Image (cartoon, rainbow, N blue to C red; front, side, top):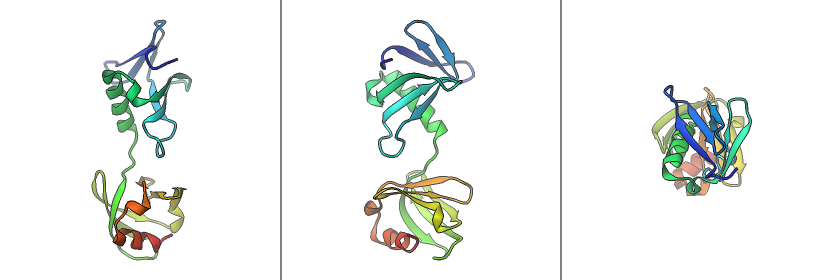
Length: 156
């Protein structure tokens, strides 16, 4: 099904409603990113409440503006992965330690239980899980300032 063969709306409870060109209606539809870190705007599946793929969106920009906004809002409400832009300081270089960071969502602090909670995604991308299971993303370690890279290197 192409990106123009359906309509998305919200019901009175705020849940996504998918209507196909044939008139089939599915409530509780969920958008799912195929590549949430590497290509977040490419490859999005609209999945029914029972897990069936209803539509594939190659690129978010392919959607009409109103539909794209609905999909982006739904993805934002379901996904919470702050991106670390700078490591301000850490409480100690042994774990557990408290990290004080600047993210794309503002300043934050979290507890790193162990070095194993830092996972390399690709060569320059890392996921850091805090003690509560919140995932923090470092999209490009080389884009961090020198002081941040120096702190990070002590844990890698």
